Image 1 (cartoon, rainbow, N blue to C red):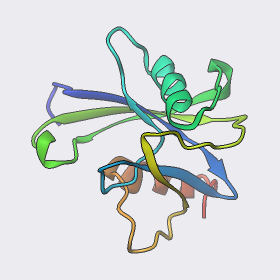
Image 2: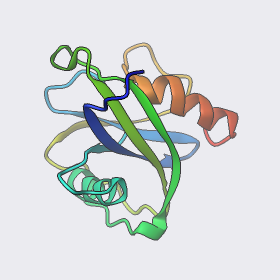
Image 3: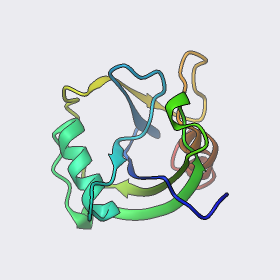
Image 4: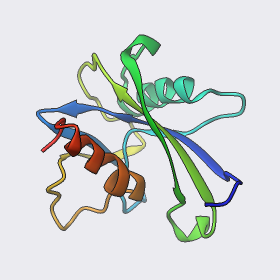
Length: 139
C-alpha cells in the first residue's frame, strides 16, 4: 500500500437473515455495499448517512452506526487503475424498509456462499465478508 489515498469512501453493512445487502449501480458490473465517496469536508459518518438516504431512502442516525473497520485496496475499474482506495465501513442498525432509489439498478442479499454470477467489490469479498463470517453474523 502506498501512503496516498486517491479515493475515500464510506460503506454500510446491513444484515438481514444472516445476509448482507449489496447493490449494483446503473452501468456497473460489480455489486458493492451501500455507500459512496465522501464529499468535500464530509466525514465518513456523514457520508454513509447521506448515501443511505440517497440510495435507499433510509433515515439513519449516527447512533445507528458502529465502526467496523477501515480497509485499503487498489480501486476497481479501468478508469481507476493504480489508484488507492480507503473505505471506512460501518455496521448499520435499526434499518427500516429498503427502497432502492434511481441510481440503484439491482440489490441482492448475499452470504459468503455467493453464486458465481455475482461480482462483489474486493474489500467486501476479501475483507468484510470473511470477518462477518468469523464473527458468526452471516452464513
